[in-house]
Length: 118
Image 1 (cartoon, rainbow, N blue to C red):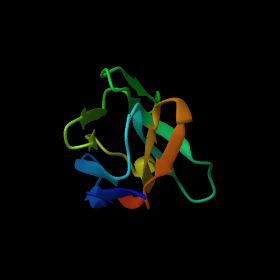
Image 2 (cartoon, rainbow, N blue to C red; image 1 turned 45 degrees about the vertical axis):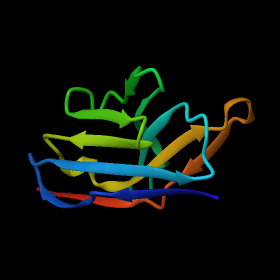
Image 3 (tube, rainbow, N blue to C red; image 1 turned 135 degrees about the vertical axis):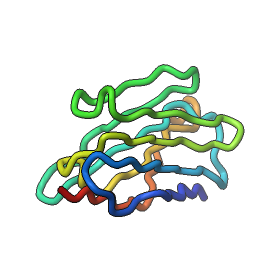
């Protein structure tokens, strides 16, 4: 089994910062892309940012310049540093890990709530 344990969500005022963490454990191997998605009420889940095993990053336009994704390949952990938070960043944030080499497997975390008050 593969477990993705997320932490770091919470309530913050607009302009504040939060740091999310997601640690992968269990029978996971050959981790490729690690990423963060979010889903606000009534909206589809969307990509926030992801990072490849080589360190190449991708961000949604709405978070560029404010969020930073990073990873620790030894700890199998991905982080999302969120600065200058806005009320529209309020959502449940999900960690996603693509792994398994040619098996092309994908696992999701349970989600962590981020609420930004105005």
